[in-house]
Length: 89
Image (cartoon, rainbow, N blue to C red; front, side):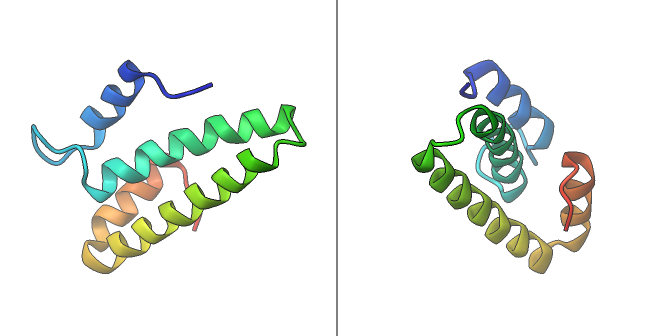
């Protein structure tokens, strides 16, 4: 149900800008997207998990803020991230 270390490393290596980059907006958005997908599947099975639903909404809003920042600062990277993750805007 959670994101394990190997999956997270694979996501980071795919979206990082340089060798030591683990906190850029692209990396954060991709990790949040994976967590959102996992939590969405969990909430389909557990409809009464309201605390989980609140966490999901917080993650979605954090991802939206990061994407807005990326759109302001680097529009081409924004388009690339949106297309590669399959996020609709």
